[in-house]
Length: 480
Image 1 (cartoon, rainbow, N blue to C red):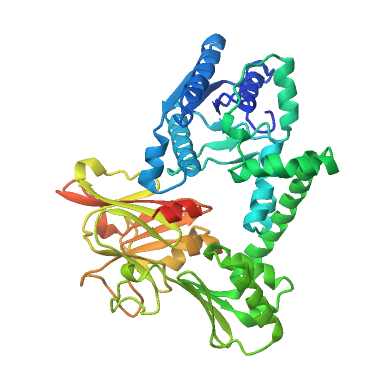
Image 2: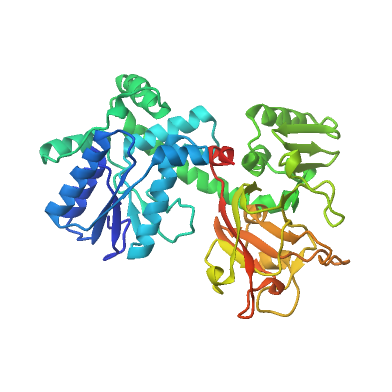
């Protein structure tokens, strides 16, 4: 705890009632470090009486020890159905969004979750079965940003990550800690449970200390991945001539000693199958003519010319719209009405509301704008794009905006611009005026609107609000 927490920082503990989280609560209670903490419990109502029994156990522990207690009830199945996601993904989204709101409303800077060394090893094997790069070999970290749909400064910590499940069970037995066993943990119809019950017993026969060995290896993988990330950040800008669309200079790429890794990292966000990478490596290594080759992943295409690799990411024929101000080779998304949209790896929620509801101060991760009407366009930024930042009078190129904000290569690629779709769009020799830039730096939103769209005290009627969050998982993407 001394390593993970500044002294005196209040912590919210996510406690399910299982052995891991109940032990974590006891350890916080008896720690000489004296961390102020509260506990929070989610009742997902997925296991009938078991779910209610878990809630009663955690609530009783909080009452007996005098620890502040928060709880919430979820109709998880209804949420999963409404959002077209799996039950597991629904529970994850619900709990982390709720944890985030509890932390924000009550001043908690940290959320503690009881993931242990076994969980970490299972995560490694899950990543390996799905196919993973270097980052997937690192497992979970002891501290990371809270994964919620709303931007948050709360850190998620895992104080039990270096402790095995056997050690936790022994501690619970020795200290006579009450806990409940989730009956679904014994089932093998879930991938994680298959690894736990069918794979790990074999590994234990081969090496009784396999969990400790795997976790030590993951610590080394994390250090090696940090080195690889530094290499990627340094050389990614060298080989990329453009980020919208992504354009890779083949000659500069092949001049680097670890060009295959660099190419993999540049294309990793676009979900190309391993067979495409094999074909790409074979083509580029052979020295043969590259012009005219096309590699596909769904609606995304990677076009090889004689000296460049150019990415064209599609979004489906029904969502395309061609305007004179839009390059015909460039994909864009036309927003014709309120609703949820997916573009460039981000989920957008668009709605109309009264000026009084929007307010003059715009929350992080969203924009509220006047003088913008349906339809409007979302697209990736292009060289030459410019806007007049809110509160200023002069133009600013988006390339300068990114430079001043110290956006990395991937930050720029993640960014999206809003463009009006009517005749008032200003296009000149310099480039196109955009209505707003939805930028992401280190995964956090950095949004700016054009001054002409600001909501003033004299604004009347309705305005358009737009919220954004990364669609970072296949399940979330499929839900749209």
